[in-house]
Image (tube, rainbow, N blue to C red):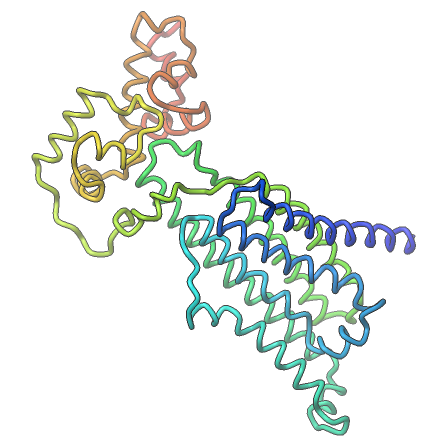
Length: 375
C-alpha cells in the first residue's frame, strides 16, 4: 500500500513539474497572444513548479541545498499569493508598477530567506540553535503560521477587489455574458482550497508529530493546482475590455455625494431609451450609449447613478424586462418561446434573463406568462 501511494505521488508530482514547464513555454510561444497578464501567470506557474520540484527532489538529490538552506521552510510558498495578486490586477485591466510598495509584498519571502541563511551561519554552540534544538517544532510552526496568515490576508484582498470589479462591470455593461468572470471565481476557488489545506497542515504541525507526508501532500495539491490553472489559463481571455480600466475612476461609486444631474439630461436619456430603444442591442454598453447621446460617458454614468438611482446594468435591463412583458402580449410573438422573446428584447442568455426577470417582477417568466394567459 505504501509503495502504491509512493508511485502515485511520484506520477502526480512529476506530471505537475512537466505540465508547469509546458504551460509556461506555451503561454510565451509566438502563437499565443502576448499580454502582461500571461507574463504574470507564467511567473506564478514557475513558482508553483519550483515548489513542486523542491518537494519531489529535496530529500533525494538536493539534500544539501534543501536541508541546509531551507531551515525554516520553503520560501517559494510565500511568493504564490503576491504573484496571484499581481496576475489578478493585470487580468482585470490594471498595471503592476515597480515601486517601494510593490516590494512590500515580498517581505515575508525575504524574511524567511534571511532567517534560513542566518540560522545556517550560526556556530554550533549558539544559544539560538540550542533553544531551537529543545523546541524543534517552533521554526516549522512559525513558517506555516506565516504562510496561512499571508494566504488569508491576500484572499480577503482578492475577494474585495473582485466585488469592486463586479460593481464596475455593472457600471459599463448591460450584458455580462462576454465578460469571463467565471475564470476569476475558479482561480480564487483554487487558492481557497490551498489555504484550507495549509490551515490543516498548521493544525497537524501544532498538535501532532510532524511527518514528511505533509510536504508530499503539498506537492500533490500544488500539482493539481498547476493542472487546473494551466488548463484554464491557456483558455482564458482578458476578463475586462481595456476601456473598462480607463473608465474605472469615473464609474466607481464615489464616497462623496454628487449633486443630482440636470433634469434636462435625465429627460433626454429617458426619451431616447423610449424612442430609439437602444436596449434591444445586446452589446449595449455605457460607452456606446454615451456616443449615441453625444455626451461624455462619465456624465452619462452620473445621470444614471444619481439622477435615476440605478447602475447601468439595472437601468438597461429594466427596459428589457418591460420589453419582454410587452412582447408576451404581442400576437405576432405567439409562436416564440420565452428564450426567443428574451433574445428579441436584448438579453443574451436564458439564465441571465430568468434571474433578472424574477428580480424585477417577483415572478419567473413562465409564471408571469401564465398570469397573462391563464389556462
